[in-house]
Image 1 (tube, helix red, strand yellow):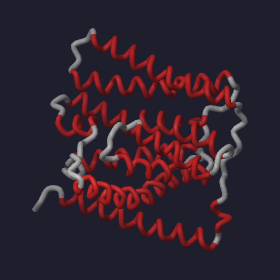
Image 2 (cartoon, helix red, strand yellow):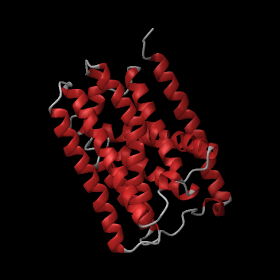
Image 3 (cartoon, one colour):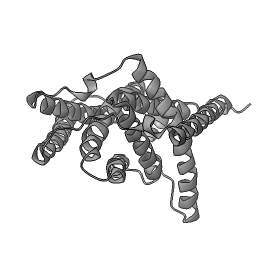
Image 4 (cartoon, helix red, strand yellow):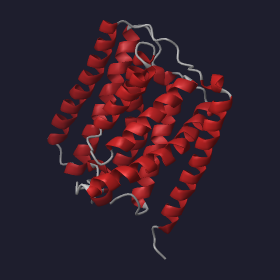
Length: 269
């Protein structure tokens, strides 16, 4: 038996459940659209303060990246681990920058706003609904790339997870992908950019721009359209629940699912 069969079977099951939830959600929206009204409060922030918010988050990421890179260069740690730890430093820098901004503006840091078990369940539902959409777009997009003879290239971190000979690098990568990256990326793209645009721009603009930047930040043409779709789904979930914890959980589970697929021999091609 192909040793990838259990992973494929599990993924097909998740996608099937997600498709059912997607159809159910669409039917609810058609019958009771009021249930899908936004639960996001207006973010009372000026344009200059928002620019400062973005600047501090980006500056934090660059500062921690430089410090991490410099510090690790003077150690005997392997190159794969240095790459992963530098990425972790960037995520930590974003979170520190966002925290500093909210602290000095005397606003509650979005990551501290949660609804317990409801956040976990809404995050899981968000992941399941996203899966059939992401896989559908990925299938179509990769068919287009193949038709134009454009090579399908794995993301650098996926390649590292598959091929690194250093257990510390792989294990640290998993922790970064499941914990640090979701917190940092959701803080900047959904709790930051989307929340700002949601009440200041047409809704489609507020949904699309953060999703495009989110996908571009991953630096992969192969996965660009699927990540755009994922970003839109996350924004819709954030909009409906009003808590960034929902999308952090969904994002963490999505990354964990991707890692398990790679480990299971699926999705690494």
